[in-house]
Image (cartoon, rainbow, N blue to C red; front, side):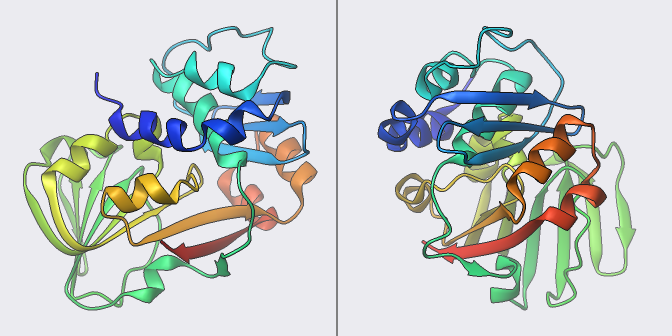
Length: 237
């Protein structure tokens, strides 16, 4: 199992991780959220496959120790990505969607049924982790992720759920793109690692009302409910 990029992200952020303790955790069917001892909130996409290492004893533990012991299954990475997502600040970020920086040519998208409009591109191909069949909707072609072989794109938009489900290394090895963007709810601010792998822009969602975000996830809230309390930001790497 290759988790090269995730391990590099952890190495880059290890100093920050070691400064923090976990003070609360929620793993709901849709999202995972953590609260750290500096009151920061982290969010990730929950993939319910596996078991959290140390469940029942995580609160009070050092964030680095929890992350390095939770890398093997999708559910473990859901927790680790939520912790990593909590790190960093909004400094250097601009409000908006990173996809709006680009237009024209072919856009490739990788994620779980991404529901976004990509009308500023000539053609769009979506490799959907959820899809089992090929579909065509307007200028957008939707394919199962399992059908990915080699792909050439003008712009590639990779959702950070690909770090949770451990596909990001394979995606990067299989695509050729002029512009590479990492975005989505599980996104992690690790600029050195991301630049090393060719990413130009990072999209990240920040909570507007931190405690409301945490409670919404704990209480099983949907994406629609959560979207009222988070805003989209991006920064160039």
